[in-house]
Length: 260
Image (cartoon, rainbow, N blue to C red):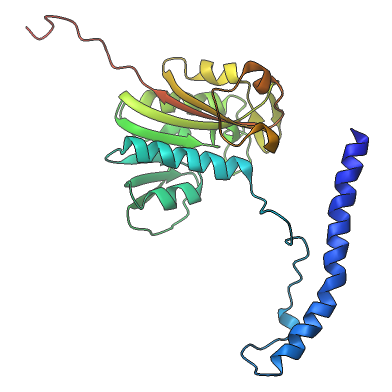
């Protein structure tokens, strides 16, 4: 393992040094080229040396790219009249509000001002909705932070449980809830950043709901991007994976003759 780590460090460092060595010759060549017909000013004060971007492939945050892609596809498939989101990615709500009206509630509102997107300040532990009133709801990469003080909220060890209880309370019968949290084989807290859950913990937090769909974004790229219904063995290997859960609240049974 130590040898593998050293190889990765060497690969990154050598790439950085290679780009650094090319920077000055490229700058001088660009400056000479500009003499033929100056279209842009080239001042020393504007130089921004980007020395780590010349990679064979484009790197990205696996959690946020894949979970937003998953959630957008759920909304494209279910097409709710209106969707309510609690504090998820701004990239998700800003993009999906182009085709689904979104009510976006956050502890720290962003003031995006986009059409199709209503923004409000809210504490997830005190949601401003009646019981069973929200048909389409998401709260993604959020509950793991509640109560850790990272975003200025009060310290509360069980803050995530209170938040999950509120989400269960407001979801309507027949309604859907999209939940995204970090997953690992062993649950833990990385204070004050986030909690990392075991799969069974998430199921227990939403035990009143039915699990319609589950995808894992694994730690390792070679294990896949969005993995549908991953094996227990793959879940156990995770240290900081990402779980995408689509829950549905059961509708009450219809009792024959109840309307007589």
